[in-house]
Length: 246
Image (cartoon, rainbow, N blue to C red; front, top):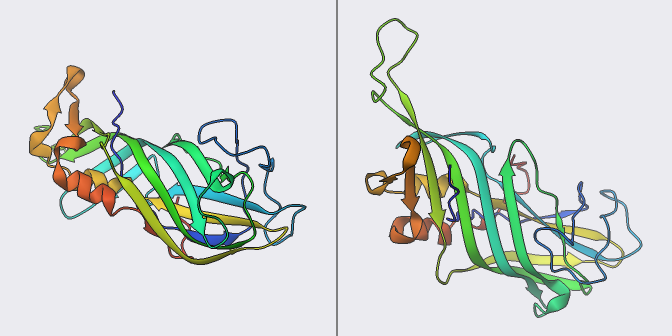
């Protein structure tokens, strides 16, 4: 199945001290400078140097099911690509010290993406994360009632699963997430946590406009659906600090 380049960012940014994973500055989402630490200190413990990390999770488990009043579907994989991701505040204007040139993150097969490190963050207060959306790709299955023509044996409930691909590549879409007052202290690893809501984007799609593709799948071009683009614009938000999204 093809991947979609559409993007739903439910950017919930919770500021946490410490971080449980390591980033790979040389891999997807690179762009961190030479001052990038190899991994954050253990949570609650000061490190040898100041570091600022970005962690993006999904609002729903991927793979996993999503239910809404409109439909029931399963998300198999989600890919999010951002460019020019900047941490901005009194401490830094969003220059190369706190900029990631490209963030390319994929969820699926129960793999959790690793946190990403900004290169050389100055100590001080940060208030925003800004980024430009390059693309989002979502693959999954939509449960369709009665389409399967099931019988009354109890072995088939008459429902089918329609495989879909949703793609969006917005011509120009910037995201701006308020962080409040995030204090990056000397010798401490600080993590900005964002939540990306792929289900919100899929739920906003007009399925009557889905295009059949080879193999019985359907393709949804999110660039041609204003509701999908609107969902994308509003999907990045501060996450509650008392939640632990999958």
